[in-house]
Image (cartoon, rainbow, N blue to C red; front, side, top):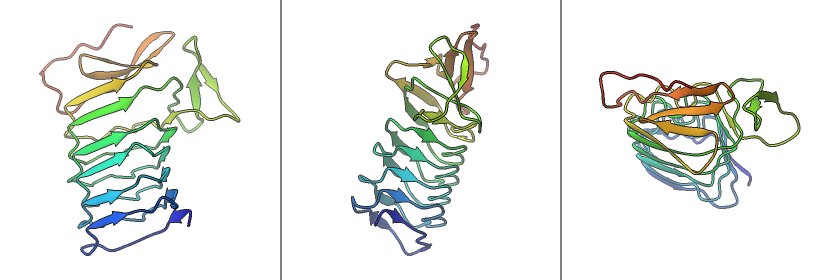
Length: 193
């Protein structure tokens, strides 16, 4: 078994342990599983689009996950805690409409922000990448997180946090990526490059 296909059990399923032989959770696999509060994903490497859409999960350890699809956890209103590992790709609006208040993002040395999958080179210039693995962050990957108060970055790389706001560094300066919706303070002046 390499992929866990759709398991539509709203109101019944409370806890799941995915065996280490399963490497992928398919698109929509646990969609609307509102009673699902706990899942063990230790061997899983990929989560498909909307896999946990409107699930009842309260926390998710994604440290083994390499690829997280679009809207994977969107509208999982009880999801308050998430642990991210060194992912290679993360889709758009992954944690939108969740209860996450604190997000720690692993620092990445290569990023891209659109469907063409470009990355920043060492000089901070956009370069199209073909034929090699690149850490990819879709536009709005962390958008829609209405409860987010704090964002931090672990490790060295092109991401940085200044005054609790996430930036990416490039040749022209800093680009603002994420302003936490519940960030403390009534005023903010973005960093000047």
